[in-house]
Length: 232
Image (cartoon, rainbow, N blue to C red; front, top):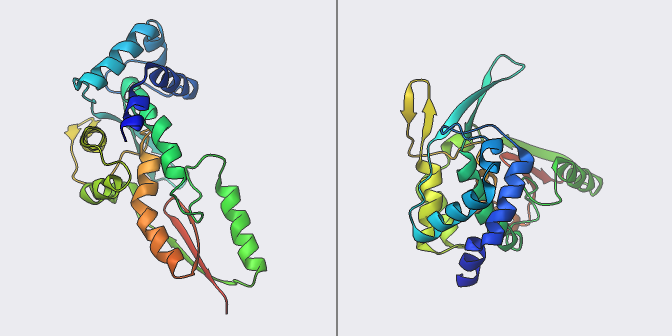
């Protein structure tokens, strides 16, 4: 664990995190600091940000609410962290993803390196060819919005048992979202739009993957979309 923390706080890791965040661009958060503004003095900004995290003075800001209209007339809410918060989340992700990749189930296909929905489709096709023709299709309604914080942190503790890191993640998921009506806090849910959220979602459902696959049931899961296949 000490090695992971040291790697997380390494200046070169924060530099790499900044490069990934800058490459994806994205809009500003509630502080209105854009990628371009941060880049004007990036060396000093990265050093100060890493130093703030290391000495415990770093505090994330609320997410910015962005409403995306859908073709069906409904809308999707994104919660966008600030550029600085995205960098810190990416820095942790850089060192945490390799640890979890050795643990995650082969039944899980979303938000993982070198995997996509196409791999999930191919796996389902392979199972069909093997005679698995009955499919139970499930979608967890409003999954990201209903993740229980206490249970998520309990699951995280199994793999990343460090008080400082757990407090950091807790602050990211409980910081709230700034809407037109003001700051909204919630006791559950993780922000769609945050860098750290995809891996947290997979960790939250990892126990589910273990339980299903331990029963020799054929499972294909892409985020909150679940396919369970059986033979006649």
